[in-house]
Image (cartoon, rainbow, N blue to C red; front, side):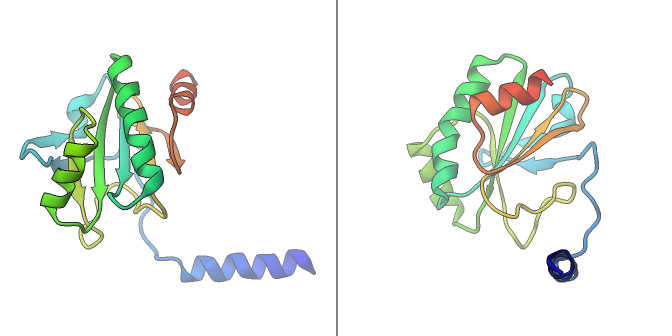
Length: 155
């Protein structure tokens, strides 16, 4: 009976969830960064890329930002793009980054205009690790660490 009840709950959740196409194995990402420069994920081929969704109001995001910055700075074959998934005013995001510099490009994406090839985060932080061939190697929900990034790259 427990199996039946839990199956009904799962089915109900699936019906309530928004329907969208599955994220492609090799997603594209073209955005304009906060400094006005174009960013194209395809131009990063040959490198591991951390695509990190975060927000200025997210405490775990704030904690992981320096860890990601340090990981990128100490791993020459790793790049990152920060996606401020935040409806906060652009000036406030820039002020936040002045206090919490990351050393990699950051773009703002709002909930009204989500990225085409990336699933909308179910929570923040959310991170995708893109392999040098451009394919998704790992999806992280919650904060990433140097250890979790290293383990995913070593696989």
